[in-house]
Amino acid sequence: MDDLDRRLINRLQLGLPLVRHPWQALAEELDSNATELLDRLHELLNDGVLTRFGPMFDIDRLGGAFTLAALAVPESHFETIAELLADMPEVAHNYRREHTWNMWFVLACPSEQAINDALLRIEHLTGLVPLNLPKEETYHVGLYFPV
Amino acid sequence: MKNALSEQQSLALRRLLETGLPLTSRPFQALAEQIEASEPQVLEQVQRWHEQGLFRRVGLVVNHRALGFAANAMLVLDVPDALVDEVGRRLGQAPGISLCYQRPRRLPQWQYNLFCMIHGRQRDRVEAQVQALLEEHLLDDLPHQLLFSTHLFKQCGGRFSAPVGARSDG
Image (tube, rainbow over all chains, first blue to last red):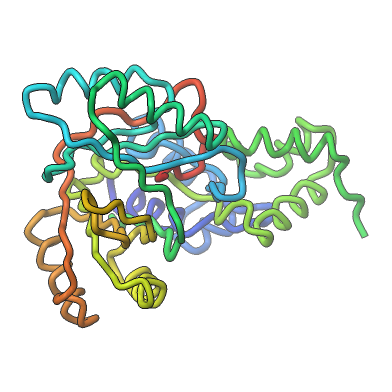
């Protein structure tokens, strides 16, 4: 990654201008040219440094139901239960965190009912009662990773 | 006044956008060709959706670990109900906080109702940053904890996942 890659990543995290020639507009800002920027972006996506380029939809405006849930998993069962969750299509991602509540995952389902069903299934499969912590208020969403 | 897209064209455009924006010098022209519309029609619809808040921006999802942001911490606080909106808004605007949400307490197991995500490169720097932030906002007396992630087991769901490009942070 060189300086232009870094400036491109930082700039694109703020959003592409919604104009007919967006890459031309960015090229002027970044002192480059449209073809070069598109080539760079293509490569960063191929390399896996970036995982997506496109509109960032507001999840609250789309259908579907989501929650953040946690389990307090005994250390000896941790790997087994992590694998079990990995096999569930409703589990969007799963982080180990340093806490008694050591397994934190997001459930994404078509409906609230399906969320509740998934939580009950997890309880049944693991013998552990999950914390169900759905979002009640959003104060800020602004992921930005300056490079 | 340009003609608006038909309902069918709008739906087709939205589906296309969920997969990302074409990597070409005139992406809105490329989209227009796929739904048999004109570039101005597509651009106008995309701008309208943006104004309406359907999407926040046309931007990137970065692989934050690949970019060196390995210290991912969740700060949780127990904020009195009467103050949680104000504190949430203040912390949400603080530099370094990438996400800030109110979630329910689950007593007696879980007492925290405000959640902030902080992504940093080094753990000790994130700890210092959080401490400074709490002091600056006079919040260091509130019960709080900082939960670092040590391992990511699963990145993405299968059968139903949020339409691609939506943040699925529950």
